[in-house]
Length: 305
Image (cartoon, rainbow, N blue to C red; front, side, top):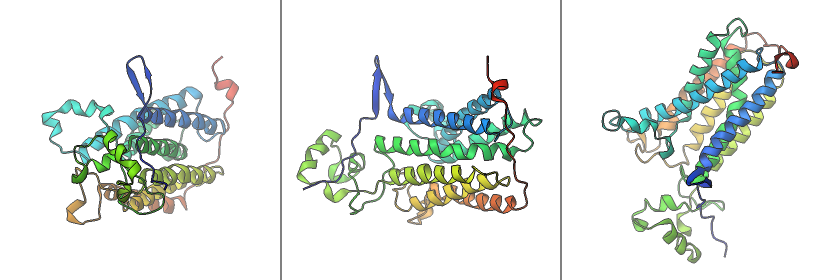
């Protein structure tokens, strides 16, 4: 008899001396490198009329925005605010987990605004920058969700679907298995004693939707010159809808649960509604906005000797 997949993957990819390099960190690194490479490709195609140094500045600021914004927003919205007085250094312990996409997005928007304000002579409109960055974001989103899956976190609700999986960390929150280690739970796995506790792999759904689908749609959509706001609007609308939908089959964050005793509304859904509204507004605005025509850059002239 074939048993459901037991999600117990070593979160440490390899060691450098005594330092463990985690898969989750490598996923962030992969997202930054992938975004950097494809962003440079788009820059050379004239989608952002700046030289390579200016683009690298933008990439660096956005990287800082993702990390700072994602962490700060998580601590402000997903944790009790008491940490500010009791343990303020907790905000720097990123390795303990806890990042928010919505905060990372705000961080990227702030970072790109700072970059644009210094280069308004080269890039006429702020949303030309946002439209340039938007197709690159799903790379990091998708890889981040794979990191969540490897960590065995952010699991879905109980399910009997054929592809449902066993999450040992979820079992440890069940009174029946409280106090048992992952190794002890794995020892029960061959007997089928855990088969009734399978859950939806919601991280993999988000990997497919927020990563694969969003990247494919946005990349293909942005190949042709589009009206200003259109690419950003499509990004916001797609992410907001996908995240809102997946939250219905994902277990809410244990420290928050469902909001206002609704029995269904989560913090992720509340924060996704503004994105849906903004996405629709930007797509409507794009109807009367100009088409942003690529301005090819002389790669040889802007490359270091």
